Length: 276
Ligand SMILES: [Zn+2]
Image 1 (cartoon, rainbow, N blue to C red):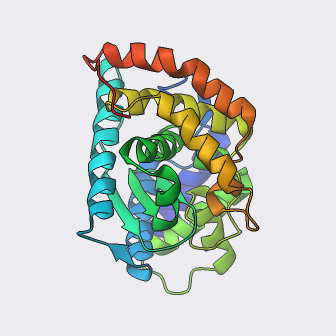
Image 2 (image 1 turned 45 degrees about the horizontal axis):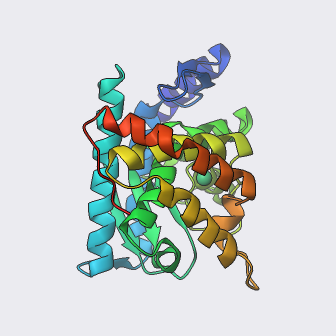
């Protein structure tokens, strides 16, 4: 029976505190729920999110989201392949959708399922700005930050949610479903998202910068994007993206100092001109 199988699997995984090496950082990270179990569930959650929200299709903005997303995905694949991680993205099923929602937000679930909210477009302004955001979100997914920010107990709940969703069971416990959404960065419940830790933000910034450069976008645009994001946060409300991705001068300084390195990395892939 599927549920029993997953419980046994989860138990075994938790008992051994399985570690996987993150190909981007070389660091060992705790992977409590294996991708083979989580990705199909994530895909289902993603489809459900699209069904419950207004997906924009055919507009210039929607086409831009797909184009930039494809370039970011291709860059991530090239980078991983070149660094000896062929097959790492084998189970990814990349998808890029623009959703009509004035929240300043974007996210990527493990498996390459990306959503960009229309509310972030006035800040991203153009393709390069969007590449900053999408590169950053893809980096969180590739580095498995969603799983890492959960406690073992919460991850067990995620496992339970995954089982219930996978088994098409009706009435997944709301809190459990909330944990799943939190782990995978889904913004369907505004306010329940846990922020990523500062170290995860820094990691995603750095990985994202390399990916956007390999995709042919000027890494200098990253600091500019976060400057605009910071300016935008001065209003009466805190944008969703800001609350989970706190912007600060250190982040902007870091991005500026890493830009040359990102361009050098891109040059290894024959990318010598950068769109800004
Ligand atoms: Zn982030």
